[in-house]
Length: 182
Image 1 (cartoon, helix red, strand yellow):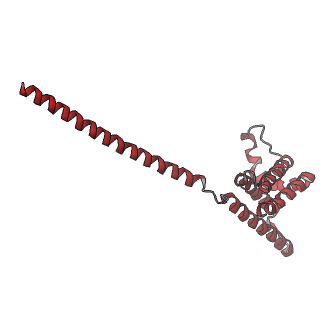
Image 2 (cartoon, helix red, strand yellow):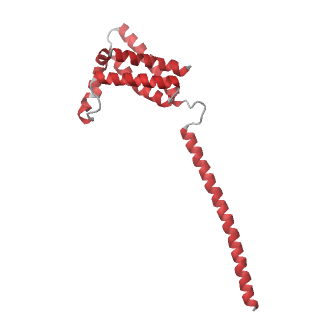
Image 3 (spheres, rainbow, N blue to C red):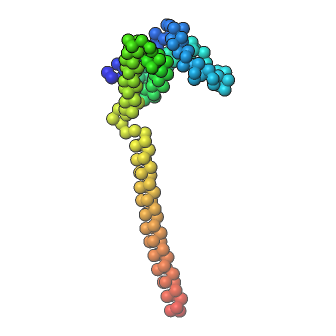
């Protein structure tokens, strides 16, 4: 139940942003002007730089990532996508530090902290392995198992080489003894 509940705010927010992309773009414009606009010439022309298109892309990420998270499909990847979408949304949409009116500042701070809490939930979801070992643990275990196997094989090779050397030494000694007794 946790993932669908966490995902619901993103799906709802994504749908809302698609329905009112221009309104959301006005809120995003100052952040876009500070971050994306100065780099626009260096970006490939396929990368959108206008606020309305960026809001629509962000909305699509929220809807798709939310759906993936809600249905348990690639939940760790979906959580990271949503987290990547949440950060600029929070900075652009809830700049409490710019508010002069104490009531508005408090309201924006509450929304900012709500989003920080959502970010924490997404971090937990991104780290959740559903009881399965993580990829890092599995890789470390596989490397350890491979090292053990190499060590066992090396021991086997040494034993067989030792036995073969022993047999060869006995054969040489026997041949040498035969040659001396003639």
